[in-house]
Every structure is written in C-alpha cells, then in structure tokens.
Amino acid sequence: MPNFLETGRLVLRAFTTDDTDHLLALESAPEVMRFINGGRPTDREAIEKRALPRLLHDYPCWGTRGYWAAQEKTTGTFLGWFEFRPLDEHSPAVVELGYRLNQAAWGHGYATEGSRALIHKGFTDLDVERVTANTMAVNTRSRRVMEKSGLSFVRNFTGDWPEAIEGSEQGEVEYELTRTEWEQSR
Image (tube, rainbow, N blue to C red):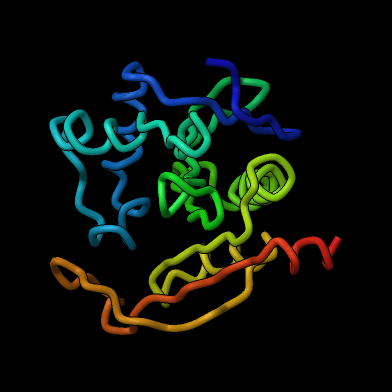
C-alpha cells in the first residue's frame, strides 16, 4: 500500500504487523500513556490482539484505513501514529482526529503538521464535513495542537472511564472544525 500522505517532514503510511515493536515501545512510555491510562505500559498481547486490529482496519466508506503510522521523512524514524477515521464506518461525513507520538517527537510541530495535512486531505479529497477531536481537559499540549490545527472548543463533558486517572476528575473536552469554517479560514 503506498503512503497515504506526505508533508514536508512526515510520511503517514498504513500500519503492518511489522510495526508491533514500534507500538510496544510507544505504548510502554509512561509520559505518552499518561492521559490514556495513567501511564501504565501496554503489553505485547494487548498490542497484538487489540491495538493492531484497530489500526489495520479498513473503513468501507473510504476503502482504506483510519490510523496511520507516522515516520520522519528523511530518516524513516517511527514517530507514532495519527488517527483520522470516520465515526460511522459507512459515511465519511464526520471523522475523529487523534495522534500519539513518541516523547522524543514532542515540541517539534509534528502533531500540528500531520493534523493540518489530514484535515486538508479530508476536506479536499475524502468528503469530510466535520472533524472532531477529544482529550482530557488537563491535556494542555494536545488541546494546543487542536487549536493550532484550526479546531475550536465545543464543550466540556465527563467520559465514562473504566478507572479514574489523575486529571480525569476535570473531565474531557471536545473540539471541532467544519468544512465551511475551514474554507472560510483559507
């Protein structure tokens, strides 16, 4: 499968089972997983049985994936992943944007660069009408990426967490960007 998307510094490509070790390292980093599960590492079995099937899933409305492995363009270094998947797998109208990058990739603008490129592709090539993104209210870095990518705050809400993690008592936030808003900002 060819690369899904390239930017000035990133290549977003389909995941393969060969990415298992990359995912294991990513999801074993306490700071990376801090706002996901409180910083607990994910074991290999969970990667192979839960994470990889989700990342390898093709969405019928696009005939392609909704999660993309992110590599640094010049070195090929695995940086993490981006999510840009339809909430209804039979309709591309509303997609969820997400990202999970290695801590070494933080602070370099990769999350914003990849998010902006996915949003552009969604509105120009994939029939997307609305992009949504969620995170914990206390996750200020992720919220800043959403804002820099053009999304606007919609609401605070309380998610149904299987177990509380530090900061979950402050709830979650939702951001969005519609095609109309994106076109008006260009």
